[in-house]
Image 1 (tube, rainbow, N blue to C red):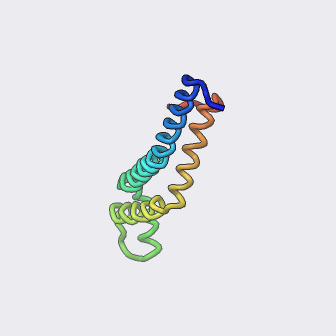
Image 2: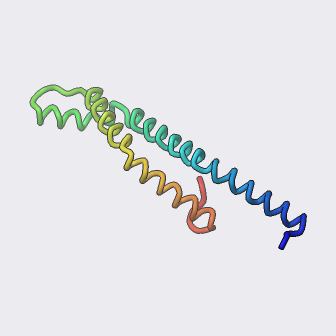
Image 3: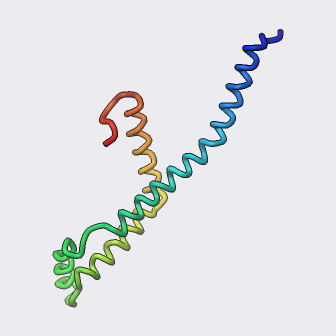
Amino acid sequence: GSLEPGLEAQLVERLAQRFVLDRKAPTLEKRERCAYQEMLQQVAWTALEPLAAQEAASLLSRRWLAPVSSVETLRAFRRCLHSILSDERVLDIVELQMAAHFSRHAAGIGPGPG
């Protein structure tokens, strides 16, 4: 059997919308992932102030029996943090955690944004 003209047009429109949404979804997800990656990189390079690294610098100086500045300590710490936060596995975790948060929020469960 043939479909009613209005129903057929509705069905075609829904299929077209689904096709367009399916094609856009990976691009949107990739853009989200890139945004998270950028956020993680910003965290790594702006983490802490030199003053916050003073105690660690003092401890490193005692351990290595050589003077270590808080600036050098901070620089090394930020490099380590950047290496960790640039790992694809960390990005996977962030992506999953963000999706879990917002899916709970969309379902009306848990804390909202902000």
